[in-house]
Length: 395
Image 1 (tube, rainbow, N blue to C red):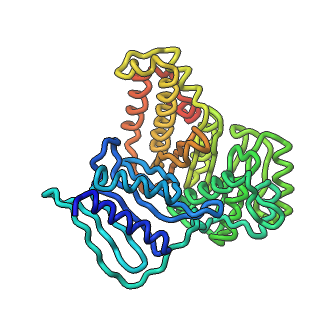
Image 2 (image 1 turned 90 degrees about the horizontal axis):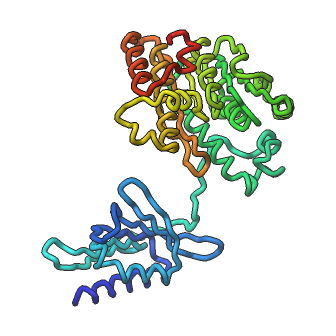
Image 3 (image 1 turned 90 degrees about the vertical axis):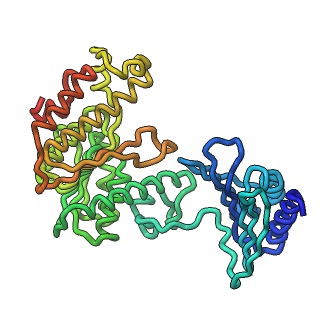
């Protein structure tokens, strides 16, 4: 049997398994085509708008791309790629596995292995994911426009609901890194409409069963009034919102400080509130890094990256990295272990860097070494001062 005949026999088996509802999954590998960094394709059945399709997950070196095809479109792809671009394929059905393989000597073989009877997987396109923040009976989710009166997530609020849960998932891992206490004191600086603030209180109360006093700080009076009314309606007795700016707010002792998308130096003000309150956990997602960019534009330092910073868009990105890098160093100066990572996809917001500080009293910091790093970075980029450095008194 020639190679084209073997490819035809293999794809006929795929078609037969689809028609007989015995298809479980298919993988294509040993890629020798021209598309850069493509490694494998994984195929499964899905149902989209009452129509059965095959979902292709293209696995690249650093990313995955998913595309859905009708059965006929998919079969055409198999006939045009198996044995040509992909020299290995494995079909898994309810009763057997079938392997297509081009060996090192160039010989193509098809092997069939009988298996114990297996069930076909669910055709749900997106498997239901158990969320930390559940929707049932949550008055605040309805009041904030996330769910309807029956607790179903509204179509236009799906992204917001996923975003809230993503934040809570990230914070959950960080919360478990700090010391346990009978009562945690938490401040959410620049809480806005309170989406995260409410969800965080809900998480403490109904998931962790942890007593927590949570304060949202917001300068817009109408939002503060709205959020306090929703908190009262939801029975969230230890959640309240205060009107004011971050730099004027007096938090007292804190365990956790959060500031998401506080604009420009407001993030620095929030970090400093956390440091002076001896917060065990400081979490910020900075926004609008204008202060350092102005410094870099004004001084135009001569350095190895000036071939990039001559362009406005690259200068903006460089200023963001330098600003947040200096923030991390200043947190380290004050005894915090730091993490900087991407926290949500660009589909939601282009500002997707989270800076985290976890207070560690056992950590002995070489303060002079940290100060030297800060000064070296400022000199390299032509920065006269950093707002957080100035208000911390270490400039």
